[in-house]
Amino acid sequence: MRVHVDAERPNPRKLQPAVDALKKGQVIVYPTDTGYAFGCAMSSVKGIAAIRRLKGLDERSHKPLTMIVAGLTDVGRFGVLGNSHFRLVRRLLPGPYTLVLQATSEVPKSMHNRHHEVGLRVPDHLVCRMLIGELGEPLLTGSVTPGENETPELEEAEELESRHARDVAVTVDVGPLWPDPSTVLRMIGDDIEVLREGKGDFRP
Image 1 (cartoon, rainbow, N blue to C red):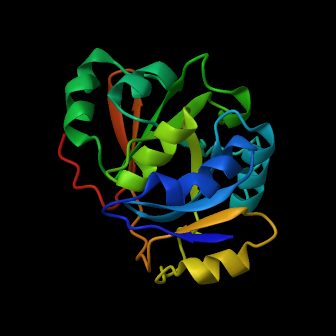
Image 2 (cartoon, rainbow, N blue to C red):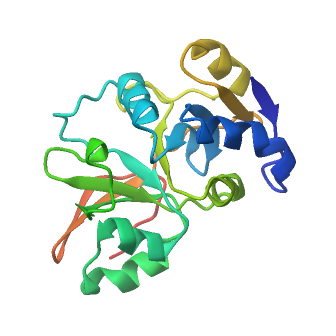
């Protein structure tokens, strides 16, 4: 099922099929500020397993899974954020950044990597904020881009719906999007490591 939504003025009623699918533990495709992504409710064990499969990540992978959260309060709820990084993170978010932090006990174990880390994002995108607000919990997320080393292509929601028909219940269509991956920052203790330079213009 594909639903058309205005990215600038999303209508909650039009997003309802996607919210209903998330509440059932299903996977959706939805837009972010860095392109289209797979998403499921954080509480959905079935959805987390499906996104791991879609992204080719097993539980031994060094790459952490990423959550979309509502704001800075939730970043501190699900990740261990040192005082030295708080001011920086407040300046960066919302925006095209993924923060890799030590996971707190509130993060499902099925989302950890082998180092007990988790990725956290607060995208600058109204549809993301509305989905989280209507769902009432964070989204597990993963870009639909097949691999980081492949040449990015314009993402069309109709094509994504067809390609992932067996795994995705609802596709939220806001028109074609050009994928531009987030900048990934690993913040453990007082250290900051740039794991990937992306859309975000990072200045320490």
